[in-house]
Structure formats: C-alpha cells, structure tokens
Image 1 (cartoon, one colour):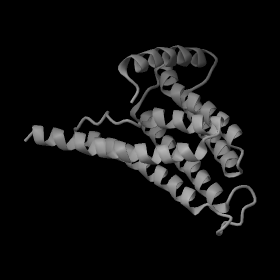
Image 2 (image 1 turned 180 degrees about the horizontal axis):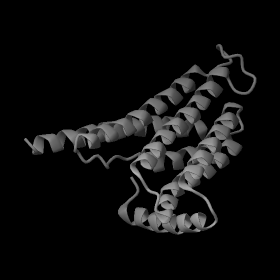
Image 3 (image 1 turned 120 degrees about the vertical axis):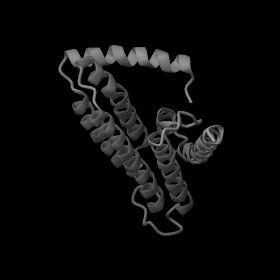
Image 4 (image 1 turned 60 degrees about the vertical axis):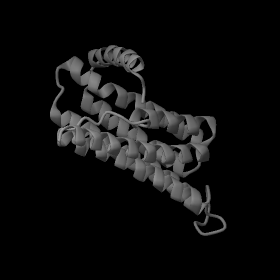
Amino acid sequence: MLDARAREALKGLSDWTGRSLARVGFTANSLTALGIALSAVAAWRIADGAFLAGGLILAAGGVLDFCDGAVARARGTASRYGAFLDSVTDRVSDALVFSAFAWYFFRGGPGGSGVSPDGNELMAGVALAAYGGSQLTSYIRAKAESLGYDCKTGILERAERLILLCAGLILGFVEIMLWAVAALSIVTVVQRLVHVVRQDRAGT
C-alpha cells in the first residue's frame, strides 16, 4: 500500500491535472471511456505478444483512470453514479488485461497452437490466479465497506497492481510479474479478511 505521504503527493498532482483537463473540456465520463478503450487496445497488444506497447498503452490508460475523479471534482460533477461507473470500468479493465495474458500463454505466444507443448498452460493458470486474486481483493473491500467495516488495507491495491503490471510489461519481466501479482493478491485477500474479522471481534 502506498504510504500516506505518497498518496497526499499524488492527490495534489491528480487535483492539478484534473483542473487542467477540465479547463480544456474533458469530462470524467469521457476520460473513463477513453481509459477503458486504451485498456482494450493494451489487452490486444498483450495477447499478440507486444508487451512493451501493451505496457505503455496500459500506463496511459492508468493515468486517465487516475485523473477522472479529479476532473469530476473540478467540474463539480462528482456523484455516486460516477464512482460506481469508475469502479465497474476498473473491473472490466482487469478482466481484459488478465484474459489477454491467459490467452497469450495458452496459445504459446504469437501464432501458438494453444495445446502442449506449444502452449504454456502453467503461466496461463498463473494469469488466471492473478486475475482471481485481484477480483477478490476488490470484492472484499466493497462488501466489507457496504456492511460498515473499514477495509482500506492490504499490500497490493489497484494502484500498486497497475504499477506492477506496467513495470513488468515495459521492463520485460512478465512471468515474474504475474507470479508476484498472484502471490501478493492472495496475501492482500488474507490481510483484508483478518482486518475485518478483528473489527468484528472488537465490536462484539
């Protein structure tokens, strides 16, 4: 989890960027739509094995996702529906990206046949495990907070996961990155479950 000082610095940058984008006519919804479109393009490049291009495009989409809430605040259009839409599109982006990894490895790379020995079923499975862990991480927080618990904890939240994904793609350590995302997502799931259990016990 990014520490408080880092989050505060990023919030200042986000707010400044949001005001700048709002002044030139962007809306939060337009940035959300553009961000999901970039995620789809990144997934296409990942599935085709163009990891560097995929990483750069995914990073660009992440920047837009980072700014859409700030644009909404700057324009005075922040709403519960906007927050809901942003959360849903985050899940769609994750599904696209991790499915692209699974497809790439299952096919054994560009032009692969999708069956052993060409396909790398192990890494396809790791990509699916990383996806499952990522979805559980988000679901546990959403469910916990809907029931009144605090659940802002864990080593690998979405921002950190996106940074790790982009770094792995751009720097060329994709397999190591996927193992790390899968493992750290599982750790985060356990951390959040324990955090909620402790709150529940403290309140009884």
